[in-house]
Image (cartoon, rainbow, N blue to C red; front, side, top):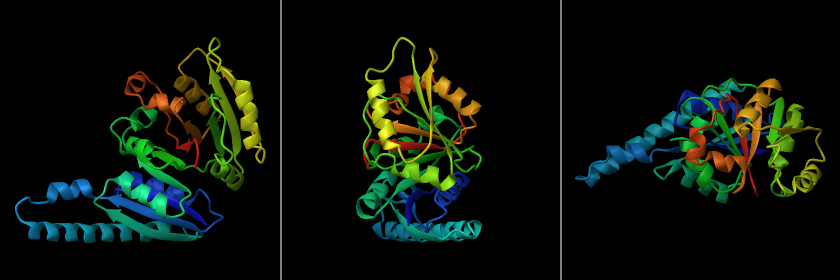
Length: 282
């Protein structure tokens, strides 16, 4: 059984992420934990004068959220005919990442899938977005980010942007390998480096990476470029018709640099495709 957390704010964007999640591992029963946080709305609605009114408002809001979750549940089950779905609800006034972390700590969860608002691309995803809070604060777990304007496509062409700066954990690619096998995907490894600034130990880390990926076929691309790494990756994804980009989240990674606003401001990384962020360990 695949166990997936999908946050929702009841927008079309959130539903697109839910639809994507339901089709990632269609050969297995899929248990989806729909997560919603209404803390901000509740804070705005509460009166500071009358606690009895506050209780009534909180109860009414909780009931409304439940009704909305039921609507989403029936819609996704209807839209996923032929796929066995189990949909559960987790909602409350706590911050979204707190609800997600509580689930990860207490329920067997494989990964998280969430939509991102605004224009497409990493620059927009990580500025003023709920997604950045989740990336920075949730317990390490694979995380899919689905841009608002991404067209639904199965992950038939996947690239892992390998920075080759650190070794890889044994269990780091379990989910990725499962998805590759599930969809018989064309899998690429792309290592982008500046001609005069090759990562020290890259060959050694590449050997370690190959050992972690023995069960799947892939093509390796060593790309020397003096352009910004995000621009080179954009060109690669477009030329190879990539529909899932995989990044690694660790303190020296490309993703970490993207999370720095100063870097993002000059970025031109505009890709309307899903991202899979793999933590260092799961």
